Amino acid sequence: MKVLLGVTGSIAAYKSVLVARLLVKAGHEVKTILSRGGENFISSLSISNLTVNDVFTEDDFWIPGQKVPLHIELARWPDVVVVAPATMHFLGKLAHGLADDLLTSTIGAIDRPVLLAPAMHTEMWNSRVLQDNVKRLKIFGYEFIGPYEGELSSGDRGIGRMAEPEDIIERVIEIGNTERKLRGKKIVITYGGTEEDIDEVRVITNKSSGKMGISLSRRAKELGAHVIAVVGRVEVHPLYYDEIYYARSVDQLSATLHEIVPKADVLIMAAAVSDFKPVGRMEGKVKRGGKLVVEFEPTEDILKSLSEHKRPDQVFVGFALESKNLLENARKKMEEKGVDMIVANYATAMGSDYISGYILTKDGERIPLETITKSELAILLYDKIAEKIEKG
Ligand code: CTP
View 1 (cartoon, rainbow, N blue to C red):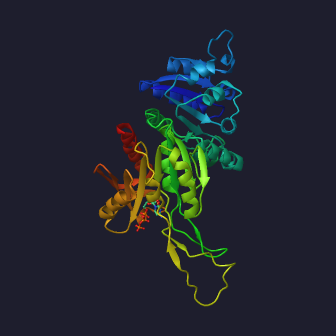
View 2 (cartoon, helix red, strand yellow):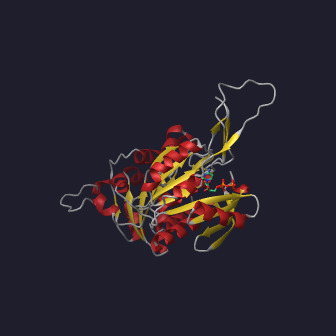
View 3 (cartoon, rainbow, N blue to C red):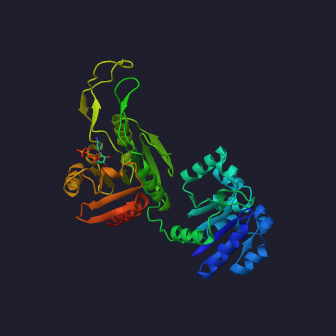
């Protein structure tokens, strides 16, 4: 595998020497870019001796007479990029598209997975502006490893310690090996719960957290897809998307999806959509005292109505949340809602990081899920989706 290693200016840079060494030992090809800050901590000589390959510094950024600028040539070379350590300053530049040196310009032009291993003091990591930049970078699909809690160069303990070289390498290989088999595909992912008004201040909703949606979006970005998130009421911060729509009620969700799904290749309906809504919203804020009787009427089955206009080249995936007769009910839902596959799961998955149940496909496949993480489910699900797209 071709790995482009970026090193920025932090005391943790001494560990990047080990990252380079272990990668080369494992048979990977490593080229390195040292930022000006990185050069303060390690020398290009030591890295080039270890990697037996090119090491570039700021002095190489613009070399006269180059047919293709170096940062473009380098951006076209690797299977995967890792920046270890990644400083607060570097992350800030990357988050805002500031490409004023060789490393940021190269990453700015890259179409491969990028892993970032931050290292800094706890106060810096916890600062609002840094955390906001990390969120921004995740939205764009950058992968992070660490930082972790531990001893820092100042002698303090806290979060900010760079991930260990062995762990960085494991993750680099994992994401570098990911074939971008959904490149260019438009994937609509709905997640979170819906909310229906009872009166001016009260709503009826459900326990959905939105965690499934984050895992699905993250994996879709890893696979090169264009992610369109449609988000309801969530307990998580939406991440890993190219476009985002907010839809609170079943009617808003329906209107949004009817508009955008015709242009999509894949729809994954992970949202927990309310099956009932109050018959009309009560005026103002209902006063306390006595019993309150709210009458509910059924809502539209959005997935079912979207499927009526589904093109054969589109792949639709539903979720079936059951408390009993899982397989039987999920199969029925797959049929009735006209979807290509359905994730059959139990109510215990709501709000949890884990899920158990089955992936069922229209072709009769049944893949058991024995308490796996939502990220693991996302890997399996996209394998099936990519297979379906390929088969047509
Ligand atoms: N769904 C939908 N519109 C609704 C209700 C559900 O599009 N009004 C979608 C969900 O997003 C999910 C699938 O349909 O992908 C199954 O949802 P689930 O809650 O398991 O089933 P319901 O159709 O609501 O049936 P029931 O509540 O009777 O189990």
